[in-house]
Image (cartoon, rainbow, N blue to C red; front, side, top):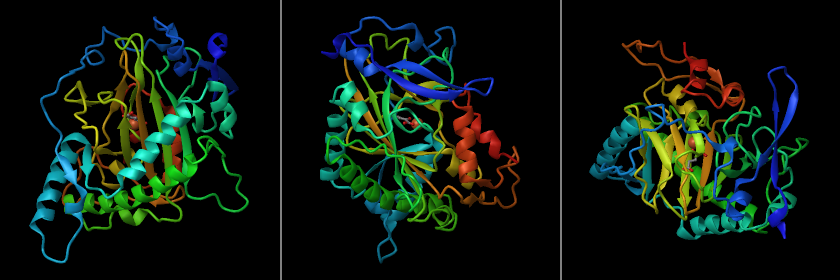
Amino acid sequence: MEKNIECFHEATFIDQNGHPRTSRVPVVQELARQGLNYLPKRFVSVNHNDPIESSTVQHVSTTLPIINVAKLRSGSEPDEGRVEELAKLASVVKEWGLFLVTEHGIGSDILNGVKDVVKGFFGLSFQEKKQCVGSYVSVDNMGYGRNFVKSEDQPLDWIDRLTIKAAPAPKGGVKELNVWPQRPPNFRQVIENYVEEARNVLDELLIALAEALALESHVFLKHFDSNNSEINVRINYYPPCPRPDLALGITPHTDASALTLLMQFETTGGLQILKDRKWLTVPWTDDALLVNVGDLLEIMSNGRLKSPWHRVVTQMNVERFSAALFYNPPSRAEIEPEPIEDLVPEDGGFKKVVVSDYLQHSYAISPTKEKQAILYAKV
Ligand SMILES: O=C(O)CCC(=O)C(=O)O
Ligand SMILES: [Fe+2]
């Protein structure tokens, strides 16, 4: 029935003259459902004359060491396995800015539940999806719709997404940005369970990362608190794309978060990072979760850790889902970079920033051609 209806997301932004504008963006899932066999102009984003943009290395021989979170948990005995795992973590996170984790303790029932509700949501028709999310028009980059639409003429990503503020719980008097979908009916419950399990793992990883860098255990975790830390969940859906050579699923960016926890399903092979000036497909095995360093952790660590510049490519006959959980300190927290003794970093290091100021800045200037938002926090 919907076949002939044109489906649009409405993305609001402030134009160059400071006026609010709403752009109607075609819903890529519906384009794919209609079996579109060409790429509409607005989605052409890869410039093949640019040596870096077209530098995709599809088959990587490198494998990414997988971090066993159970081994990072301190036991009662001095533990060689833990020391070894911390060394492995230090090496992989410094080289890649991201790492894979297994044995994290999040049960497969919870992970499968997430997959089911996400597929259930995206399995609905466009009209059903619109009706069942509380706030449809994209507000503050939240809700069902698009990321970072700032003008009518910017290249658009081949993605549909749903972004939800999952924590902290809204306080009395503050109107909740109600974007939890009502369907599938257990969506909220399942995602909230996952978020709470994930929070524990991320807290453990913040301790492990500090120790891996030979810092005091709580230098990163001290900025977080379970009542007020922010967790945003973004569900990304990349439908099959008629021209993967011309369209991107997500334009290059860093995550503004402290840490991002990612799961992918249905297919692998979409996520790439820029490494040694080449785009490299992240060798991400299906069943592992992926953790990446965000800008806020780069700042807290005073540049010891770097948020990777990454993008998502599209694929021809397959659909891919990912669920990204962005973990941030409380929005009013002021984060202070961990000093580096003896050594003034060549570029001067980072200064204190208020979390919400940084996030707002990053949102306001994104998307950018290069890693730029973080300059806001440089000395
Ligand atoms: O889909 C992915 O693998 C990555 C998604 C991503 O980079 C993001 O949501 O920020
Ligand atoms: Fe990202």
